[in-house]
Length: 525
Image (cartoon, rainbow, N blue to C red; front, side, top):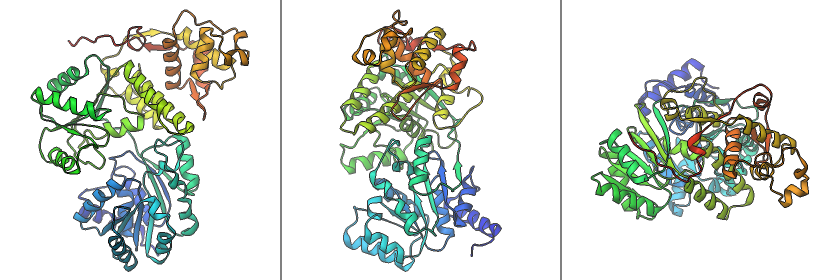
């Protein structure tokens, strides 16, 4: 029997205040805790830093037995368990870093009912021995964290996650809560089918971080631009600067130090002592700036990071959102600042093309990169584009991003948009941007000839422009929802495209993304 909802709510609130030190639940947290504590399943879509872990940690304390948390991030497990223990929660983890006798101690504690929470790596959970153990142990619930890992469409697919369907089969009576900060439709559908959550309620938290000001500019001399940004806007503030390679991390940190800025380098090539040292200084001192590869920041909970700067493009919107989201967790004004240039785009694409990942994974990553570039080139409010990517609509422009604060010069490319949409429709709504560009430019490639597309009225209508402009037009049509990409990233015209084709709607594109030169210079006023 579960306690009456009112009593349950009081217990939940008491734990929230005494263990976590929060006066009240935020957003949908309270509803999720109640749903799971009462034995129901749930699918939780919540941004990182939005209090996701509370949604399974608290119900685990409210229900009899141990909450089992499946998490793929072994490095994070230890941090989370340490934090929980400091707060008086009986937590432990089971993964490959434990010695056999340590693992046995944890297993015994589980069987005795001496644990509130047990974090388990997915490959460990799936071992027959572990599943048998769980059948003998008092289990409160299963939490599947980073649930997007079940999906091939996710940005972080883990094959072992697909076998987690075993939880619904072997423990049908125990509640399952799946949590993720990535929520595109396809990934969501996969989570529901693999984890058998078709009937579970979905709880969606807003991905909006209104206190973060989003800014993206073109690269000129990136280190100087960064220095100028820090000195002008964030002198003495703590911040994180993300770079792609270890080499650029070290160079940037050295260069900032030479300019009198308290900067440290952090990457996976350093010894764990050095890495811990950097983390300690960043967490405990004021105004330290860390230059890092994305290895930095997982599980770092410093509320007053005032800026996150990107000197290189992240690989996806998910990455960008997660990295920029390390700024301003205290709710005070913060900046997400990024510079990029054509060469970055080329480099990231090249890295993608040369990776050893299977074709379908590469395709997914390429589309994620396109979405990110679309965001970079947006002529409309950045926050609207960002939230739209995560399935959330913001009705008004935000007024707190560079596009809102300093609207870019735009050029009317409605005629070009009509040509591109018409090429998409006439070729049957199934070809990718490269093929459509060939058709518009009048190139007689093998594919164009094989499909008979050289006989279309649209063939060659776009000759006056170059490939770059057509790529940009097609990319922006996708970003604004006039074209959508299918599973194979073939483009199709959406219902919305009627507006441009028939109803006199205009398409304005930013001039700075269309200039023929490579990187042109922005003069600082």
